[in-house]
Amino acid sequence: MDDYLAALLLLGLGVGGVVAVYAGSALVRVADPPLVCGPFLSGMPASEHAVSRFHVRWYPVTMVFLAFDMEMIFMYPWTLVVTSVGPKAVVEMFAFLLVLVAGVIYAWREGALRWT
Image (cartoon, rainbow, N blue to C red; front, side, top):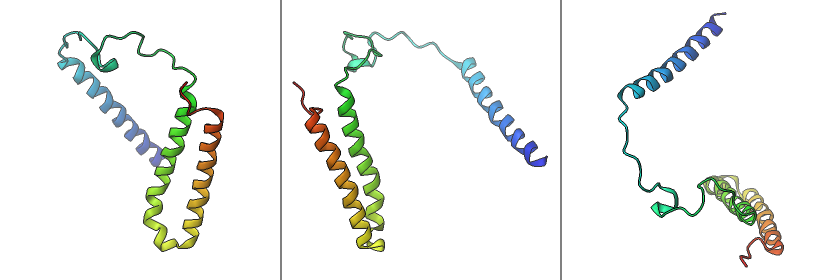
């Protein structure tokens, strides 16, 4: 039971700290002057709402970006261990890159990289 009591006490302290910070910020808050132009579209007048829907053509572009983003996330640590693991690491990385290239070829064939 002491373990649960310690966890509850820590949870209570965390929630109490968050409530204290919010209460303190509400007490010392200074009203900001209203913005003439918001940060949406780099301060230029907006022609559409900031949370309007995106065109469906952005979905494949996003998927291709995420594929290359994941490639970089896996390649940086791979560079640190490739010498200690040996040829097995090189073969695995090239297999991973082959899967990514297959995805890019598929996206290219489906027209995801065509803008017209």
